[in-house]
Length: 203
Image 1 (cartoon, rainbow, N blue to C red):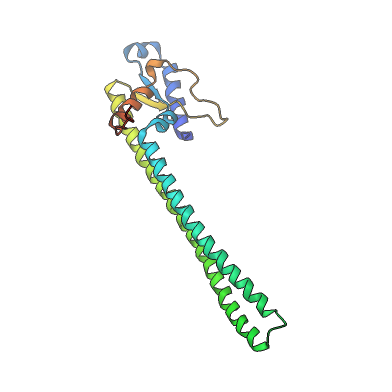
Image 2: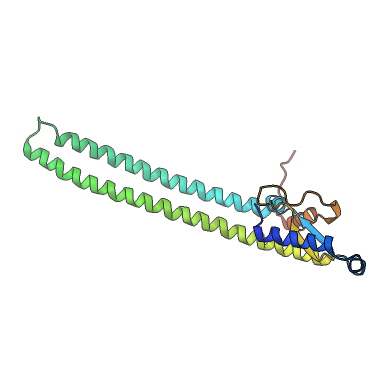
């Protein structure tokens, strides 16, 4: 996950302001900046793993439903091809072949309808899955941001920025930071404090 260019610009402005502030002002009030690794926090938050698990379940359901439709489609296609062969069979009478042609046309229409339904279903489920992922991501990021704000205020930081962001050229924006300024571990522990207990197997 990458931060936006706007966030990177804000960090650059904030760091530049710290460096360019006159020494007298710096003595009066130093700007206290904290950093977090949003990539790490998002990945290690237990709710992220739960959300990913739910997405995988939905994917399996979609896969199963698609396979059922494909099986139905394959069966209809086989019936259609059999009817077409009978229509072209010269050993059959004209009346019999016309009967098979009528059935083949009906089966062809059924196939086309199923094709359209399969495409519509696939697109609809794809959009639903994207919406589910985006909604879960937004909820998780909101919760992470809330905890970062609480910890940042409690620890007296004036601003907290994401150190996992990359510059426009793809380089890490923050090359070095003191461990004391990185709040990632503290944020992760706070977020995972409410994680459900996992039972361990009996010996």
